[in-house]
Amino acid sequence: MNSIWQSLTLSTLSLQQWRSASYLNRLLNPLRRWRQSSFMLRWGDLGGAALVGLVFAIAPFVSDDKSSLAVLLTACAGFWLLLTVSDDNGSDAGSLSPGLPEFQPTRNFWQNLAQSYRASPLSTPIHFLVLLYWSISAVATGLSPVKRAALTGLSKLTLYLILFALMARVLRSPRIRSWIIAIYLHAALAVSVYGIQQKMSGVAALATWVDPTSPSAKEPRVYSYLGNPNLLAAYLLPAIALSLMAFFVWRHWGPKLLAATMVAVDSACLYFTGSRGGWIGFAVMMLVLVILLFHWWSLYMPRFWRTLALPIGLGTIAAVIVLGVLVIEPFRDRVSSIFVGRNDSSNNFRMNVWSAVIEMIRDRPILGIGPGNVAFNKIYPIYQRPRFTALSAYSIPLEIAVETGVVGLTCFLWLLLVTFNVGWKQIQRLRLARNRDGFWLMGAIATLLGLLSHGFVDTVWYRPQVNTLWWLMIALIASYYSPEAEAPEV
Image (cartoon, rainbow, N blue to C red; front, side):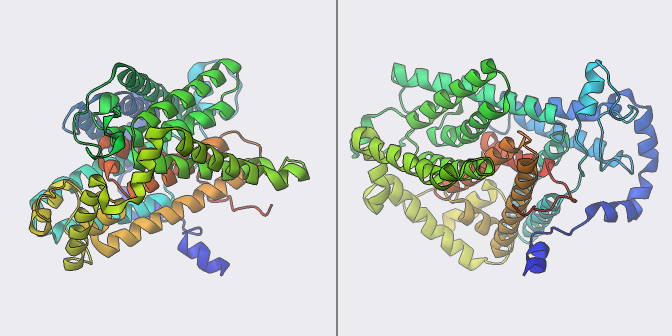
């Protein structure tokens, strides 16, 4: 059984051996010699980190993917390609400055940064499955009944996946990892502050986001700079998890106080979005975080707390939710609307869209209609129920199935399995070493599960502000990958 599990999770896959033996690898030697003489590319990963940081600094403040964010993602793709094709043969272990001696004490900033660059491979099982998912999407595009529209979706997907590859590369440096996370957390704090200001000033809704017959229809739903409360809720989920983990990772009380402030402000703004999917994602995310934190600390707990800490933590979360439902009337109204089925207009709308999408999947079950909302908008009108137009499937599993069929959905689930397996193994390793970087891993895993829970009833996951965060979490896990590290027996 153990060998089957290792094969399923690609634990024994060695992409480095394939790369060193490939003919293409030898053809790129002239580019590597050029890179050694290029001052800019010797510090190329710092340039990549700057581009990635800029993506998360501006993402919530741009309106759509046709703006400067698309240009920036294209720049990231080009820069990643340039770095990758000019890598040294031995660069899978990676260093920011190949000319620096190991562990040489110095006060020079750049040398210190290079010395903090953790040796880890540039290719992982996660990369393999991301490439496989892209390949399936490319085949689905070629077989799509609306090839030109699907090609637009494939180009967008390609930019996101290359951004993942660039992030997985630069995040291997603990310092760069901390900087990029801090950039996102500060941007999210600004977004949350503006959202809370909207709540205090009584913002007007930009769309019909609440059933007008519902008791909560008069409650304003904030959307901050993102223009949509559901999108804002999904954007804030990673910020809450990572700022909570930052409280344990950041060393001094000033940064810890800032992290605690971020958790409080982001959580308040998430509540004011009124997003039921966001609230579900938040509950799942916090549940996973409590379980992972208990596992992390259980190694050092007295026997009494090792027995009771987890039930107390889970019971506290359940008690807070129940108390909120009983005491806060708007919260109670929104939560109860989840269970009324078609009697809520939002629920009814989604159910009608899901029915039409299931028919689309039945007609093209193997490879779907091709990736992207443009292809979806070409095909969906043929199946839609009267008066229920939609821009997406309003469910991540259904969206993936309708775009790339059962083959693409299976690959996506396989990618999740391998990603969580890699993350769990590295948590085990860092836990035994008492390395606080393990908290970032726990935050990333909890965020993925929270976003997936939200994504079961919405597809804001496909918007660039959220999609970039999704791939940031997967890249964060991939950046810790160590082929030698197996899950220890504890």
